[in-house]
Length: 170
Image 1 (cartoon, rainbow, N blue to C red):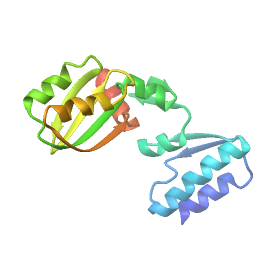
Image 2 (image 1 turned 90 degrees about the horizontal axis):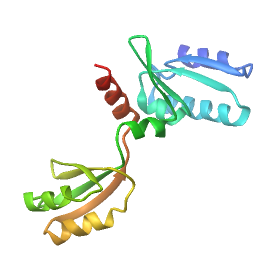
Image 3 (image 1 turned 90 degrees about the vertical axis):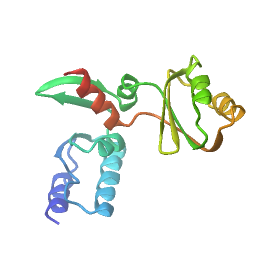
């Protein structure tokens, strides 16, 4: 309740700039979601700049139009989450199924648009070099005898980006 009250007090007079440090820390899930919605609406509706300090990358991904990553007091990256994601690699495809045998994986790895292929617990994680249709990849796997049950497209999360940036700086 103290966290909610402090946030309400900070926003009551509709300031043009709000500085927040972990605004959803200690809140239950519905309250944290409501805070995120209110902050996004405030920024969109009234043009309020929200400066958010957080370790919660999922929260930053939902709220922020610009993200800065700081390590040991030094700025290592800044940009829109999509720009930062591009640094962590291209698009990703997750394929769930059975029969991911070596020959099928070799055929997939030989494709020029495929950067990496990794099998984990009945799922195939494919990192692509650039945006490309997934149908030819799925067709290749099915022709090679793989039983494909589900295909999901995705991209690196902000957490993936953060971890990549931390590795680059070592």
